Length: 163
Image 1 (cartoon, rainbow, N blue to C red):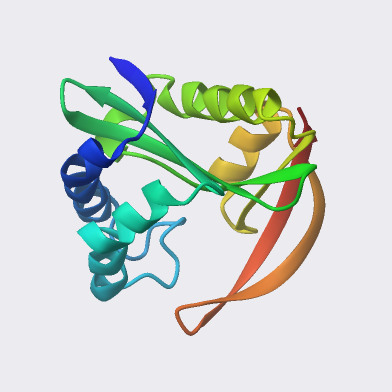
Image 2: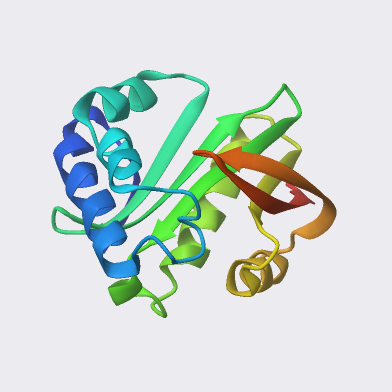
């Protein structure tokens, strides 16, 4: 098992990962609210992934065994003080192995080294599994909002923690 910052050489493996994650979880799975097959095709496209990996405001970390990606976490700079954990997925078939914790720890560590002082994460208010996980990782609720996700209004909880 290896935990690394994703590079352009990981694009094809990330493409496979997003499709497998979607197939394992399905459209009704919390975390994929509002997503469609077209949405997954878009975020798993070479162009989209290359653009993300080339953006200095975004970091993507992956857990992989050999070349198979089992989990990912992405961060996005908000301002000079705060960074957002903008996405995190661990394959359903790989849950329970500590990959989520390792990914968040890596994102926090890298954000701290880059000079950020706060990390923010958003998740659906009905996603108790994610909320409990983030609270266990030291995040606390700071608010709620509604966001449009591919035409679906989603009630979102905002959590944050100092880093």
